[in-house]
Length: 162
Image (cartoon, rainbow, N blue to C red):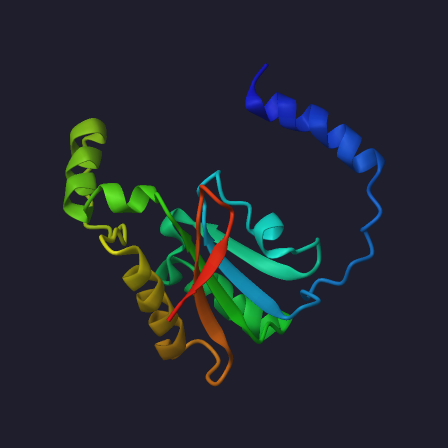
């Protein structure tokens, strides 16, 4: 059975007990969370979120540059007024450089790319950089709280990056 078939099967049980169909579209806590797509990080569980509480925007590395479009929509159309950035320990983004991945894509797929993959070598600095990217974006609201955190994949703890 494929993973998608397993998901469909699991969804039957979920939908049978579903009671949150009347939640409003804007997130109730007016917050957007940008987090890495790593399967070991469940932002909702780690941060105590329920359905309807927040927008959770996920991408490789939890990078702000990749989330700007979603943040614009979140703020302008759905009223979020706070942003939280969550990166994590043992992140795969620490294991390669952009040039290395560009070469791999070209070798394996035969397609050159000049795409930025936003790899990084310093976890705490990547969080600081993403907070700065959000605060300095001309497309995002000014004077709203933007804070950054690191989730520890071994302990489940979140710590703030200053």
